[in-house]
Image 1 (cartoon, protein in one colour):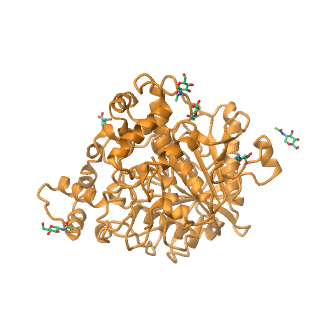
Image 2 (spheres, helix red, strand yellow):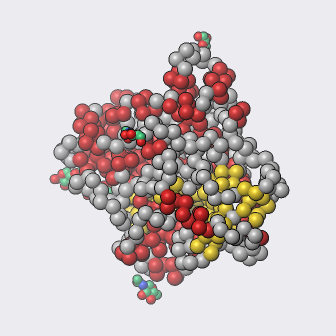
Image 3 (cartoon, rainbow, N blue to C red):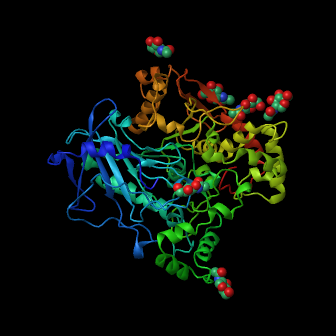
Length: 559
Ligand SMILES: *[C@@H]1O[C@H](CO)[C@@H](O)[C@H](O)[C@H]1NC(C)=O
Ligand SMILES: *[C@@H]1O[C@H](CO)[C@@H](O)[C@H](O)[C@H]1NC(C)=O
Ligand SMILES: *[C@@H]1O[C@H](CO)[C@@H](O)[C@H](O)[C@H]1NC(C)=O
Ligand SMILES: *[C@@H]1O[C@H](CO)[C@@H](O)[C@H](O)[C@H]1NC(C)=O
Ligand SMILES: *[C@@H]1O[C@H](CO)[C@@H](O)[C@H](O)[C@H]1NC(C)=O
Ligand SMILES: *[C@@H]1O[C@H](CO)[C@@H](O)[C@H](O)[C@H]1NC(C)=O
């Protein structure tokens, strides 16, 4: 993973030859002013030429005194940036293995892909926030799947402009002292700066600055959810897409942020005894990135087995007192309409947790959870420990009549629901009180999953249908799914409706896609089989009834 495979570079290198003099390939930005980037031509899935601009800095390098500080816009530069070259990833944990260090601290860049002809009508914009559990991934590589990239060549044929942005990850993006010394949610603030960059500059690439849709998958979707409930007022987006994640996901919220920060410091330097934020900042600004990355300890800190999921995540967003990213508990914000009320497209996969990245060791879990059913529930849900045991017992009965050991597929179902599906559905239902929400479930898989007795579409698999991947061959039986995904997403970007006209409707077997309503969660299936309209995904109403009678208010994370 230190050295990406050769094929990654092939399309870039081939296309960088002899096109440099074409004037539409040079763009001088509005912000920072007088700063020029150079693009390259690439070829879409259907053979159309589009322009790709790589590695545009949208922030000053978050290094030296700017490490652990809010991102500041990039300073004007001389010369020309935007060459395809080394691929910049923020420092991260490579595929759950911290024995190798991957990434560069100076990583706040974005890529722009545009099919626009100069001077034509401005095109709608898709701004993509990548997933990777807030500890991995980049705007170029898809992490957690077979190595692939966010390759826009399917979506670009639909005449939308696409932007993908990096943001600080792990302990560089989400460690905080919570008192402003090391501000809260730096990684989300990087994303926010990228949104403003798009607003300021995208017209120069043929994009419409008044028609930006923010989208993401997994931790990217959780991020989008946080931007929606953020307390800053001028978020310049017109719609949002959240796939397999929301701001109610229990893994996307840390409740012990300050403790986590000081614990890292003591791991980094065993002589560090201070409890002053300024001392912590000084220590961390003088350490190397490698020292910080190797001191995270998150794999051990929450006692692996008790954790529902594969990764006990410490370095994730948290509520911010005072300096305003988001300051209300999540459900209070959404239920009471204190969020950006714009159309939403939300989805999940038929069995997200069948992907081992999500589930971890399900056999070990089945044994542990029979012994301790309350280990099914995340540590940071709001509930007393007594009630937690009772809730866990009742919850278990919704999934299995026997034991997890004898009924391992039920473990997968619990993880799918608690890690992805329920937080997504609950967010959708709340938001639907105030804004249009369309929901879908990806229903076609092309992978052989290792868990006997259960099938379904695992976490991240949806992305193969709308991001091109050189490593995967989509055989003709996947073509309807691919087409449906590409149309659904691009239509939503353009019209804020996934099915805007009769022609698209026919592609979805003439169904009418009902919006989600409180108390009546409708969704459609997206696969190669006939599209179906269904209600009450994942037996949500039963699970909700149980959870709502136990969870304490305000609800920050769901299950
Ligand atoms: C971590 O990566 C190293 C180097 O590639 C490899 O030797 C080792 O087996 C990996 N460990 C795990 C737990 O995957
Ligand atoms: C820091 O430690 C001092 C001395 O042990 C203690 O008085 C103080 O309350 C602590 N402050 C915080 C914020 O924990
Ligand atoms: C439990 O057993 C009953 C009777 O065999 C069956 O109808 C029901 O679907 C089972 N429930 C679960 C959650 O497996
Ligand atoms: C959808 O409706 C159109 C127009 O009424 C009709 O021609 C077409 O056969 C229908 N397609 C399907 C799959 O039902
Ligand atoms: C729920 O929504 C579906 C689709 O719009 C509708 O057919 C159904 O009647 C609704 N159910 C209730 C109980 O309102
Ligand atoms: C919902 O509950 C029914 C009946 O208990 C069960 O057959 C079905 O598999 C459940 N659906 C999911 C997605 O777990």
